[in-house]
Image 1 (tube, one colour):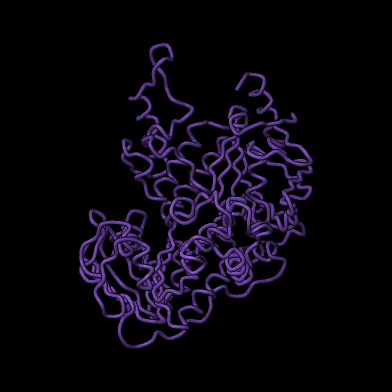
Image 2 (image 1 turned 45 degrees about the vertical axis):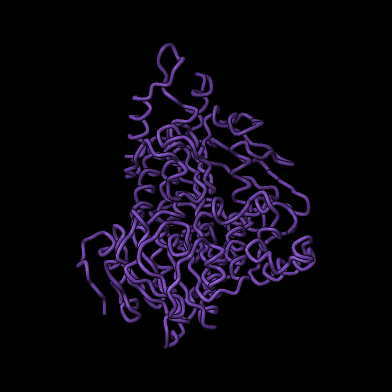
Length: 532
């Protein structure tokens, strides 16, 4: 940035560094934003919250140059801007970590972190690889991420890729940093380190904009909160005397934010836990593992049972789930309804009644360039084929999509439009529904509420509990311990690729349950601890 803009930014420290002025964004059939005006100040963490489809990500795309407003304007340090593309915003000092990961898969970690800010040598002709690796390592260390800098991005887990995205944002040294659901795939310890880094960035005088459905994080770190509902700004909270407060001065907690988001008060979001059925286990693993990532896993899940799988990032939970359905090489035995099975891939597993809903919504969960209808019916497309596959029953596909849109309350004005046009949370609902349409007997679901608002979380929890009550065996992998504790009948804990403990139903009701799970996952408890 030039000297003039730096001076303007310095003068704007106590004023609005970045402003949305009466911003409206309209798509065919949808008004995503409706005359939204918000001021983002330097030296503040400003959270933007709302239900899925409320307009949060659209607003961030406007601020970062990905979308131009239909009406209204954006001002930076008091000057009206007209970003034609994200690179224009980045040059002006606005960087964004998107909810959907956007790394270059064939570049390594160091190259992705410094993409666009590569250190140069030989009069700027060549990239200084040593300096590049040093810079990338320093930024990742700030986040507590110990990654192999030479690994290609396509080899990273979703959580590891998230760290690289955040480090890339930090490498820009932007004055305005936008984080869209940055902790959605991180464990509690990793999320805590990121929130600490956000506080440090705020204290450096930067404007930090933070979107999160983890309302406890918002209450903990935000200096100001703007609430969007149906594309409009409906309420703001400001930190004073150590607490977020509404316009009347009343202190606000997570419940107050949630009520502002949905326009009503919310009770408990977790349904009552039914009883698991007796008899043969629907899914049993014996000496199982994903080659190179997990080993010697013995577990069973009965019909009607919800088993949670906890662990820190890198514990091997996702890799084990992928190995079950044949996405990774495995060792050991998989039994389904008492019969030993070995799946060649997800289609083979699906035919046996075992489905896996990936945490990687964009990479392995959905085909973002296809319509919502096509995404909905891809796993079960054989049911809609006619004349030996020569024709697809389009009306049948549309009816299936509409049924699940209604069942999950998905905000989807145009089911025939690319699914990328939906908010992240609504995409997540489709990712779950498309596999439920195959009528499985075993559901393995990884981070089921990633990027999903509190109201939609309650709905997804209810759906999983209802499925279990009908006899479905469910394995739920989650980095949110309250989610596992509130939903599961039992929680198994993994560390370094192995099962190290179990918490039964009675133990999940104990006051110190979350602490005990963290201790097991961190290696601080007895390796064979089982809570009673």
